[in-house]
Image 1 (cartoon, rainbow, N blue to C red):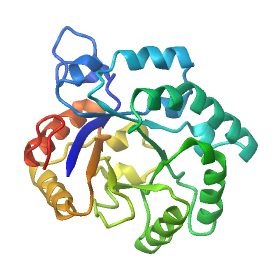
Image 2: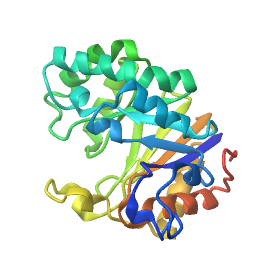
Image 3: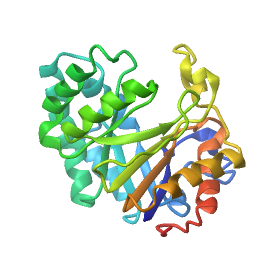
Length: 261
């Protein structure tokens, strides 16, 4: 099983002195010395121009596997026709240049928190319609009860969406076999504020302990015969926690960059 570890974003000034050396600006070139994957989340907030995104890609080492997050104008807001237009722009400006760089790149969306048992199937069918021409996309299941998780998982598999597993305060990482040969994991930290809607970025302010990371590592190893590749992204970015924890999990799993388990 090939293992790819990275963080959700990298250009955080607060990482200077904790991950990036003092006196330098955050640099994706420096980041690529330590990690084998990067999730680009800025695309969730706005769709860059094609020229701007292509320019950014040129600065990223080709050995670094990339995932991009679908924009909120596709996943969260607007009527279906408006969302289709946003998706078309996203494909033209982001997805096409990304897959030209590396056909193994990934795309992700997070299911909005107001989607539940009563409207989940409708939402996911709309998402399939909105994103139909874009290829295989992973959907993150975040704050779900076991029965809602199972229901959602079944719908995603029928619609040929991949599943992104999560670790957070409410749901600790639990992997299961799917039809996928790739598993996508996002680790948000276990801050109790994660379940509160008004806490902003503080909900991701959490430093995993070594024991917690060892438990996560055991869960990944438990499934190593089921998957060819594992992509792991830490989203506990405040205070430079994400790169610290990502490097520690890599050590626990015996990973050198682009290594094998």
